[in-house]
Length: 49
Image 1 (cartoon, rainbow, N blue to C red):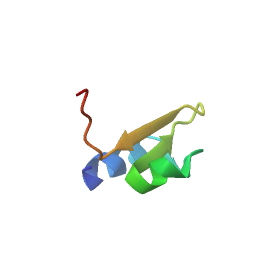
Image 2 (image 1 turned 135 degrees about the vertical axis):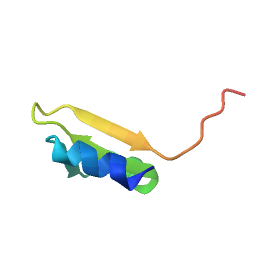
Image 3 (image 1 turned 90 degrees about the vertical axis):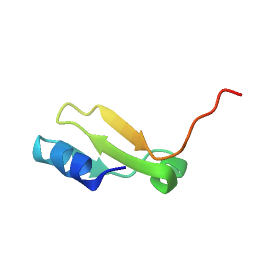
Image 4 (image 1 turned 120 degrees about the horizontal axis):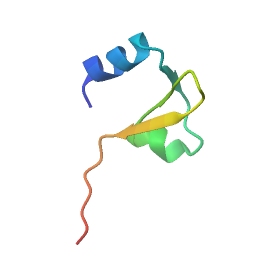
C-alpha cells in the first residue's frame, strides 16, 4: 500500500490507530477519521475461487 496515500489521508484529518482485530495490523493499516469512522486498508490479495 502506498505510503503517500496514508500520508495524504493523515494530512486531511485521518489518524492511524490500532485495529480492533490484530489481524488487520499485520496485513494493513487502520485510519480513523475525525467523526470516529474507521477505514482499513489491506495489502492482501483476494480470490473468490
